Length: 269
Image (cartoon, rainbow, N blue to C red; front, side, top):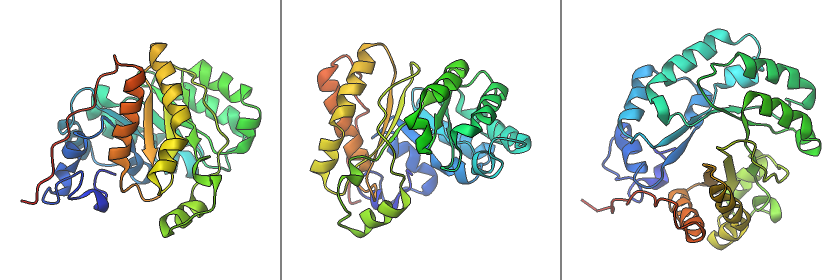
């Protein structure tokens, strides 16, 4: 994500080579979703480069490979899983949690597979699970129990603001067909809750839609939790600036929250 083309020249200097853009991104935000690891496990040297470009407090939340979660559906994926954790080892404490994103076809009837999978994972790591079948939200107790026994978090993907009205741009129309319509969930199970929020092209609508998360996040911080919030829009063109705006709103309610890093100004030269 730190190599998004629309960020170059705005949040990341256009002259930076791809291998250096994470360092610039880390001046804007202190966490990143590991979407690339969902599609392919990177080499260990690549991951070591990620660690070298970020401070020890930076948070990576790498997604487990889709071969594990979608193709094998958590069963019989030992070699892929072993290669993944070996590749991620250079992150050290920067690996805030490992993200288990499950397909919409993974239903409450599949919970025994998830419980067995979580029990067999390396216990030195933390895990966060994202489900996309509506049955989990209609009757959440069973999933909460499984996650609770494993000490894992439930990651909600809040798309309610996005789906509140029909799309008005090509980016919104594309997201309209590709993003899941998820029920709203605002409960945290662990000390490290994770939120995904999808707004709109219109900044005012995006900001209005996240107000519940500003209050929820501030409440978690007062309780001593360490939340991580990812702000998306259909094209993500302004996501780093929006993330900082969200952080500022939370910090206005919780002044003890540390500020984000000072972002280096972009120049034309």
